[in-house]
Length: 131
Image (cartoon, rainbow, N blue to C red; front, side, top):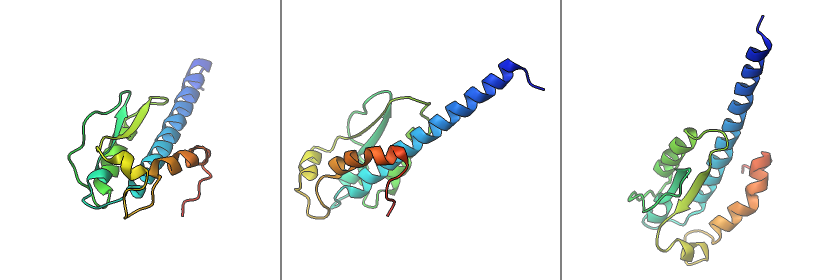
């Protein structure tokens, strides 16, 4: 029979594992929405969504990504390595990303970031509409 200290350690590991898992689910959900909502012509803007652990990424990815799959995979790789409560930064360094956010793109509606921010509370609560 495990002692109190061992039981407490197991509980701690279970809780921290759950926090890390939910942290990753939320960050992955945010990234997926941002990537999916980014207008695509060459794929440069979509391919430049970057995820940083504990620091804001600099520069561009240099990876055009018309369908978003490589961007999501690269971002999820960073997210999966994050510890519970570790700060994750989702950024896009494409020079014209602000113009796309405000409607200059004709291939997708404006407000990809603003819509995702509005949905944040639902994403965290796990009640977001997944359609």
